[in-house]
Image (tube, rainbow, N blue to C red):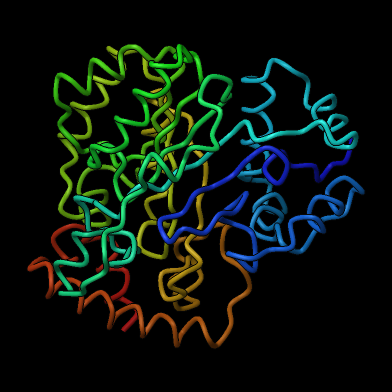
Length: 344
């Protein structure tokens, strides 16, 4: 078996809000990567450059999206990954996994996000981006009855009513065991009708966007509230929804890494790392050298002059964001602010 094999270029399709399609949002050259070349590279045991985002994580000993997707598809298909790869060699693969971005509608204005992904950010910045939504007609080529897995993203998928119409499709086609996963901020108070739909799905996963605990979470994912997330986690567990977390790591929360990971472990929530690359001024490396030395994280690379330039841009951008939101980073991340001030 190729050590670089990934199921996504063979079995997956992501339907984006701008009407583009791609097997994986992490591929370079999106929205038009050379899928045939990527497939051949992976089958020939070549670390194709298009998948560099995953290779970078794996080089650091972290689980990449490739590893997670392979493991999950193996499990959901009830077929060994070696046999799945052999099917691809023989051309027996077909669309069995879809990711659908139905809307930009979102109730959060996360620090590393922007109006393109969040209507709340659009309102704050007074930027008008049409909030297109996927119609069911656009998804007619999906075999709902035989679909193995579906992922709903946003925006905030639980904040977009159209996603529950999609879930109803699975129920209508008697495919309630299809693996359904949502990347959600976990902040939405669900209606009884929505809870009823979720309760009929027997293989449901929520991947919670959690970047810190308490005030760290509330700053990075403003204006969401930590106590509401904790209440919703209790609800999700009462509905037998499998929970995991997508932990987005930036220069703002890297110093809180140990306490965040401890919370995941204490609450029995699996997690994967998602390193911020864009905007670059929020990358973990966009910090002065002496601050990196105090934090002492394996996620830092060798310090470069551009990291200091990006850090100065970071200070400017945070000030702008705080003014728009009417808040102050000092009230949420005092330890981080003190660390910055000790460097000045």
